[in-house]
Length: 298
Image 1: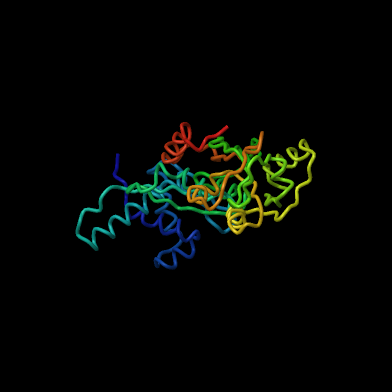
Image 2 (image 1 turned 90 degrees about the vertical axis):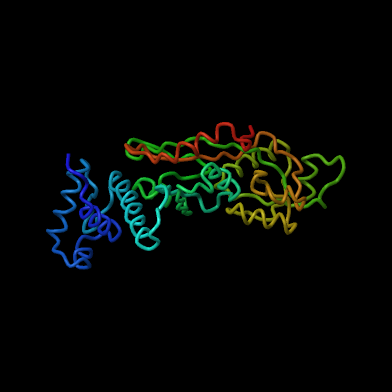
């Protein structure tokens, strides 16, 4: 069996980063046909198509994404060898993770903890809306996406949503709000509340709770960003309805207090992937670490 031709791999890498055969051919001073032949020979050697064409644009297949990860590692190591004349060290592997822009940063850090600081891992982190992230997941530009609601799946978009964490939802606010013997209903009647927006699953749970209690709390703010809810709570704008992990640092420092867990209310977190022939092996330790996580509170 012939060895891998690294000239083919170099040309493939150039086209993969440009996304356009014509532009790459011009930059490398090659004809398009010659460049196409080089890539075709690499595909035959690897046994998988590396690109799919959509109009005039080239997009990486799943095998192409894996090949690009390895190509980047190979040529980056070569560049370091030339520059340092020293051993390049262990091969690094990349993982591309997307998270809902409004998702708790503390939760994201806890989820990533199993691979934080590993010298063999490159993390590429992206944030965006649910539709943006799921679109990137479908096109294999992301390996895994973190959301607080499971996406719809069908035969065309077979998302795999794994329920990784479940946190209780509490009333959180400044210590000055504390009054001995105050009940949950008293707190909600006495102080304004900072709520997630109507699209949130937590908001619908809260509306059901206050309906059962027969009260109508004053709303200080409706916010779609947990980081902003945390800041408003720190400023004393009201009692925030959110998972304690969002304000973990403030609770530990005593800047905020968890007054009461809201009965029956939870915030769920999902790790979403798509079925792939070549899944990123770094996903497994992330998901396995959630099984016995201290963050899981039912």
